[in-house]
Image (cartoon, rainbow, N blue to C red; front, side, top):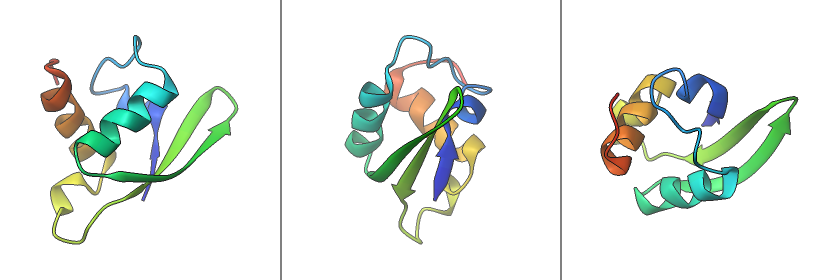
Length: 74
């Protein structure tokens, strides 16, 4: 599933994380990063999300999971 860093940032503050740090955090919470692509000023992460994790199959769901993992407000 492709996720835009810019869209996830609408829900949780990621300003202090580099793309590499964010990739590492995705992996730590159980979502393997297949690829990372730059699209202008945005970065798009292609994540492997298992079918039993429908809660993480949207920008909002993934942002909620990142907020919990990072200890930040959603």
